[in-house]
Image (tube, rainbow, N blue to C red; front, side, top):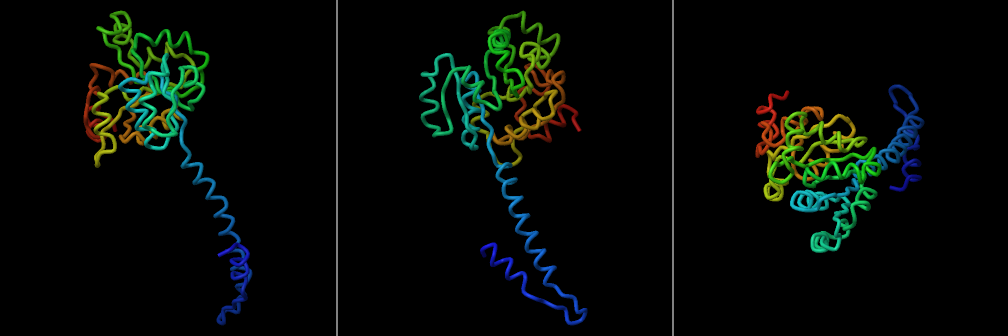
Length: 259
């Protein structure tokens, strides 16, 4: 019913024969309130359904897989590489929400940046792009592996914990550790499975960044498990009790003695 007709219909004079109360004013006010409420609520719902722009740095197995899941969930994603032409096949089958570009373009594009690079490259990433990344929500999925990344940085991670080390090299970012515990094949095959869904542990020091990360974990088809602050990310770094666990959120919380 058009708004004017609704108001006119609501303004029909009604009177309770028992009390003699004129309901015209009450009905008119109720109709007007309902119309105003509808005008207010609709934009809020639209905002709630808005999608996050995500820049992927490192579009290999993990970055390509998780980025693809986000595209399928409706998020605009820019996959980046030092050689963007190599990503044509990846983005070609994902539709208009997927684009390929440089690392600089991914950082500028993303409300959130997803970092899936060899861990040895993290210090250089901070040096080269630290200023551009400052203030950004960054999801870090890297693992320190001795045979690939070298003994020095692995020793630093073992001593200080991977969350603390990542924040050191990505100073000024709103860092969250996420998506580092499962193989890309598992991520691809088990996303959005029937309940209970697989758990993805996350850790970070910024509350808003953590909420954003948790939402993106859900959108990728998994259940987030908040393990704690960045210092607690050592609990699901490689070799930790939360690493490699293909379990539900309830089971992961039990394994890590979380409430």
